[in-house]
Image 1 (cartoon, rainbow, N blue to C red):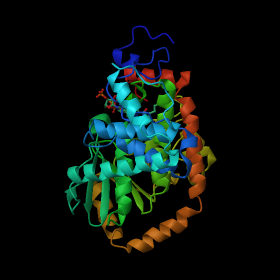
Image 2: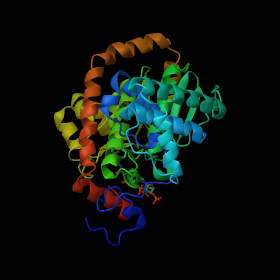
Image 3: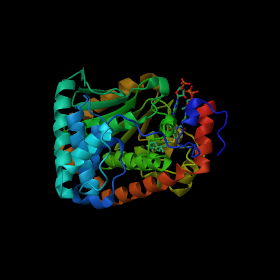
Length: 400
Ligand SMILES: CCCCCCCCCCC/C=C/C(=O)SCCNC(=O)CCNC(=O)[C@H](O)C(C)(C)COP(=O)(O)OP(=O)(O)OC[C@H]1O[C@@H](n2cnc3c(N)ncnc32)[C@H](O)[C@@H]1OP(=O)(O)O
């Protein structure tokens, strides 16, 4: 695809398949940067291993080269088995150190290497978290998040998307932090968990700059990593055990709309809108919306949103069953939080078990739908239709 004359940022856009793969960086790459993992190496604890691979990227402190060599060696042993490459030359110090670390593991079984990797990362996580996070107390912001503001008060854990200058667009870090925040909220002493946005937007959905910066493995690896990230992200909502509430304070776009089908309550300000411009972007529905939206609002209305990109007002979203209740913007925050504080005093276990009974019937089906939607999007992200739409936004910041 001819890319002559585009800005530097676009020239890095993963969509530009003509771009040669970047030179392999000379510094030691922690294996977490290579998220493509072979199915055969995963076995029963595939999720734990993938989650550990993801978590390495979020370590607050650099664990040092010795630990990184250990992570590298265990990763290679878990995914490829015993060292199977020729020894690098004497002066190729970085690759020789990596080769030595891997080779030193000898015939260690893949399963053992995988488990050792998971154990090593969880140790790194707990030491990193304990040194960087403040124990949440009532009215206290939780430390350790850059794209979110997490507060705990009145038995409510509030997860606020906090990139207002970018309309709370979800970049890769925000996806990762939301997964961590949901994991923490599922285990803390709160009764309900609330999502909302800071600034005038709830969220403008996927950050389209996520499509730039080609990894060393090229565009296919970018799309594969994106599909893994999307699937893991949506799985967190499918499996979340407590009542999950969306306080939609303004316009919502894309994935911030589609996952609403997995929430238990959706309260919207009357200035909120709901927009899923997937066809405009050469993309397809995600967040299980290909199943939940027809179920919630009927096939015709779901098609009008998901295929034709009709933007709904809060009133229309309420009429179609996507929104539980709409409030005047002037009294939105006061009315909604008064109500939620009353709900949060209800017996925690009864609410959790009731949610389980209501949601468990379809949990496996939703996981399967999520996996299918993610793999279809993996292909879509490499298509010319998506390439042109994303480049159009990035180069002109065209408004939908
Ligand atoms: C292969 C790679 C995969 C990566 C990982 C994927 C993981 C999961 C993917 C799941 C699939 C999700 C799909 C979706 O969510 S599709 C929807 C995507 N969102 C959009 O297309 C919205 C784009 N934004 C807009 O149309 C407008 O910004 C908007 C109407 C939302 C607001 O317009 P307004 O004029 O009011 O404000 P600005 O445009 O000036 O916005 C202010 C600044 O914020 C930037 N911005 C806003 N939204 C986004 C966005 N989604 N992505 C990136 N940047 C965004 C905007 O550019 C402005 O920035 P500057 O101030 O720098 O100009």
